[in-house]
Length: 242
Image (cartoon, rainbow, N blue to C red; front, side, top):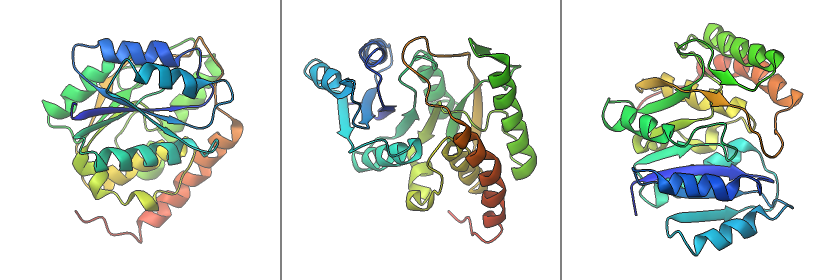
């Protein structure tokens, strides 16, 4: 067992799950994996169960249905804390995040003093491959919007490729995280920043999935736009004491 855990939420990822699991376990730095499986009708869970016979560091929590990205990660964070992991990662199943970059995120925390490391698409220009221009612009300006509203000096506030140290997840009251969709990513960064944790952005190249289907929708974007304002207003009435 290692002290590093990669949480991968899945819903209909049969095309990707075996390849991503094998890639993570092939890395020079050892990582365990926790799959949060939302009752995929395509048989994703069955593939993971077969792989568990081969990899002792592969774990899975099966949920009753599609309950939202935020709740998937919260479930994973709580499991990671209960099982004494020191570094906890968020990563997509579809190879839009390069598993090789897990090592760079880990080193940003373990060696460079970060409390959280973000795999950032925008800290050194715009590093996105295979996205239509409209999607790139929406994502880029969403991060700009979050910076303006919140005051955070983070270039990629909607990034979903991250490393948390244990102390960040222990400090945040995970039961009070409000957002369920992609705005969850913003809220976790904002809360960590308000607590004064050291957040490091590590430049990555984000490559859109080639297998399976995207889970992005207009409702997710609306949650982010209006949710950020509500989140900022709530912060005026919240104490952030470690």
